[in-house]
Amino acid sequence: MSAMYILGGMASIGLLIYLMVALLKAEWF
Image (cartoon, rainbow, N blue to C red; front, side, top):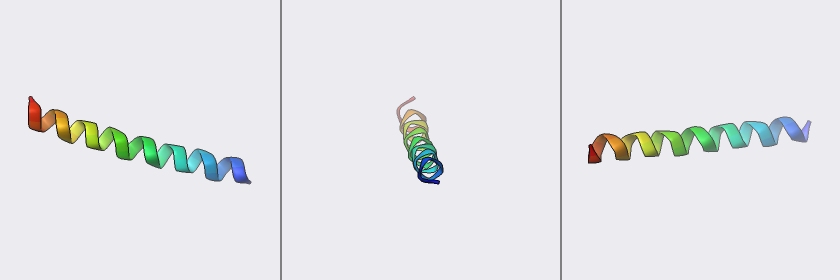
């Protein structure tokens, strides 16, 4: 059960970082 929580947390954190990088790239370029 805990593995699912860890995977979910990693996925959500990865999505957050991806969105932040996409926004920064849109602003810079």
